[in-house]
Length: 107
Image (cartoon, rainbow, N blue to C red; front, side, top):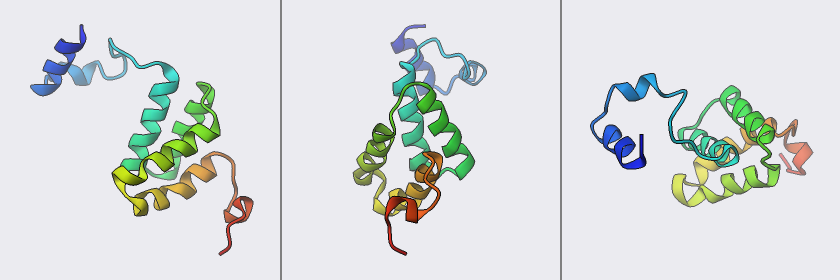
């Protein structure tokens, strides 16, 4: 299926898309897809387990921790500072930082 057809099916909410969700015919490169997934999870306020899995997948795809932190930073203007601040500890934990002391943060 080409890109315009895929877009058309999304526009009409084609039920066949749900059955094909795990194996789309058009895929982003793994690293890009992993970063997009993290951005989406930040935007919706995903729980720790989801964020940890997404970060693990991103690292496995070759994404560096600096790139993941850049995604967090890049979303401030889109989802707002409160959402980013709420998700930052989840990202930090998923990256292996135990608590705010590991990051040199007071309080």
